[in-house]
Amino acid sequence: MNQLPDYGALSLWHDTTPDDWTPRPSLPGDRDVDIAIVGAGFTGLWTARSLIHADPSLRIAVLEREVAGFGASGRNGGWCSGLFPTSLPALARAGDQQGAIALQRAMHATVDEVGVAARVEGIDCHFHKGGTVTLARTPAQWARAQTEVEAARAVGFGEGDLQLLGVAKARSRLAATDVLGATFTPHCAAIHPARLVRGLARAVERRAVTIFERTPVRAISEGRVETTLGNLRADVIVRATEGYTPSLRGQQRSLAPVYSLMVATEPLPQSYWDEIGLRDRETFSDLRHLIIYGQRTADGRLAFGGRGAPYHLGSRTQARFDRNPRVFAALRRTLVELFPSLRDVRFTHAWGGPLGIARDWFASVGFDQVTGLAWAGGYVGDGVGTSNLAGRTLADLILGRATDLVSLPWVGHRSPPWEPEPLRWLGVNSGLQVMTAADREEGLTNRPSILARAMEPFVGGD
Image 1 (tube, rainbow, N blue to C red):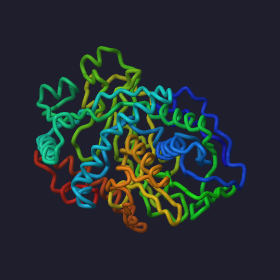
Image 2 (image 1 turned 60 degrees about the vertical axis):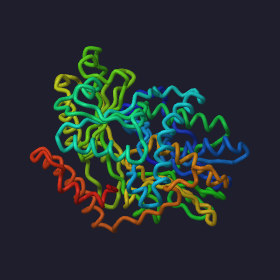
Image 3 (image 1 turned 135 degrees about the horizontal axis):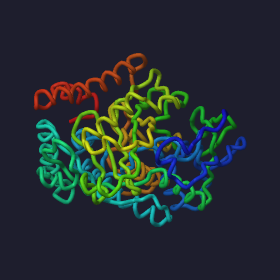
Image 4 (image 1 turned 90 degrees about the vertical axis):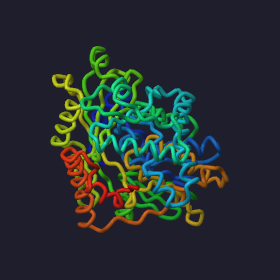
């Protein structure tokens, strides 16, 4: 392979993880194992942990093109949330309402599951369950907030799951500009994602799981993982590659890699936090269509991200796509628009990376007992918590355990393939432009966007 990248420079999280990022040994040639996992991110490592806990005799190998935590698991916004990337109505349409509710409750429980696992494994990932405040800053956003809470009440989720906040209570949590109200859910923890994923890698290694890094995988087929360094033969093979899935032979249309970018400030003095809020390290967003997200880090920074970077023809993922000066500038402007006192604050980090989106925006997990092939992914950026549920579910499926997890409605779901190029490029980038235009439309009309409503069937909406 080429010269080693500077892994510590990939993001704020990589830079502030106490690792030297020296790669583990690569696959030394052909080898036989019981279970091969492709991808050493959250999905792959949670799956390995669940499997080896259940059966310590299993021979498990994890293959990683770069190093554990290189991809989205080490670069995300640090939200371990109870959000599932597919809406409750869409889940209900795919199965039944009770199954959709069960999946949402499983996601809520997963937040605590991650916190317990980190504590058990001795991983200091700065886990703090302060919840999420989602601001409404226009009349259209306030209408969406009210509708969201009403929909939650209709299926049995109460104040302990989702609250509607008036102006005063919303501003007491996050004193941004133009706040009309907010929703608040306690089902989210702020974390340092790179600390978590690197800690998980060490945790599974302590239980004799082998991680082969700097080992590019070319293709997955029944009983075999083909790499540039040899073949790994296994009875069960787990695809845990998320936004990098199109790099596998035959998987070019399975998931679309869409880039999300972030910026981070220098550590801020207490005076800023006295003004802004986030006293309980709440994660935060607002109800615009082009997603933004942020958190107060354990060392007092604002880490802030959002969509807006283009999708690249042919589902390409390259290091140069991680950095887009136009999007970074827009993120800094948006953060200052939310909090004008940050105008003269220094930004120390800017980074990005691809996340995976299925054609129907429906995350899934599954296992084919005939071929021994398993998969999980399509998290649409909500993978920190969802990957833990995926790992536990995959372990139950692979080991043939009839648990509540294997009957949840995302299990066995098959998303349709994305369109061939250039239709895929046109569709994804048009969607990004439409969402940007929808926010402008709402700013002008103070009414819910007609453009956004027209796009809902194409982006997993209600």
